[in-house]
Structures are given as C-alpha cells and as structure tokens.
Length: 127
Image (cartoon, rainbow, N blue to C red; front, side, top):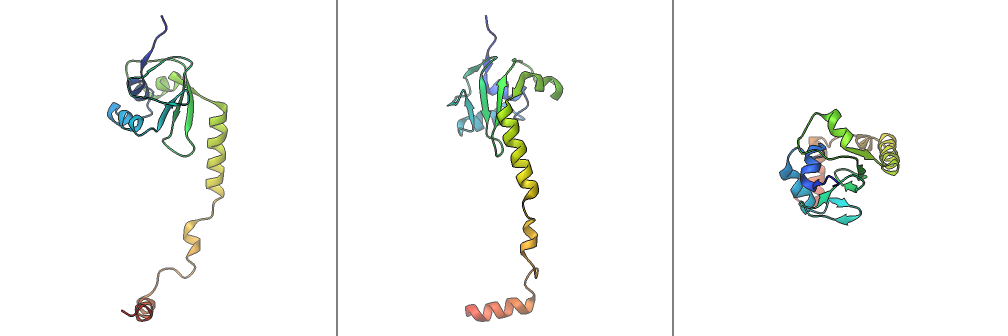
C-alpha cells in the first residue's frame, strides 16, 4: 500500500510551517495547492504529488518524495520533497530582479522635510 499523510501534517513535517495550525490556516486561505487544485487540510498526499506553497513570491512548487509522521531536523525534512526545476528557475529570477531593483531610499534626494518645509507645506494646505 502506498504511504499517504494528511496535507497539514506533511507541510508541518517538511518544515514549510512552524505549526500544524499555521499550515491549516494557510490551506484554508487557498495558499496551498495539490496537483494544481485547492485542497483541504485532511487531503492525503503521497509520493509523486505536486504541492504548490504560496508563502512568498514566486510560489514554491515541490514534488512529494516521502512522508513522515514526525517533524525531524531540517536535513531530514528536506528529503521529503524535491523542488521542481521551473520553481528553482523562477525563484532565482525573482532573487536576481530584487537584487537589481533600485534602493527605495534613493528616491528621497533631499531627505525628510525640515521643520521649515513642514511649515511651508502647512501654509500651502491652509492649516
């Protein structure tokens, strides 16, 4: 018989979420898909299933390689899944775009308004 485990337990054991409660909340919000379909926490997952976790942008797509009923150390948990090549490529591209993005603070050339600037602005606004 093929080994299967509840989705919320698998996400917890694979260390995607710190607690099963958090996993249940995220599944309920539709942020976790199994084989491209919205799932419920009690949905059984087993080896070969494709799980999409939208924790960050872009989402992480992993293929289930195994199940574990206990939450072990991170190296053991990482053996429960394998990230798809497309997911790795998308995450690397997103990281590169973030690295190349301009620093938001560079938009403020003059810095914060001084007290005098704020008085002038208040006078213009009629306060």
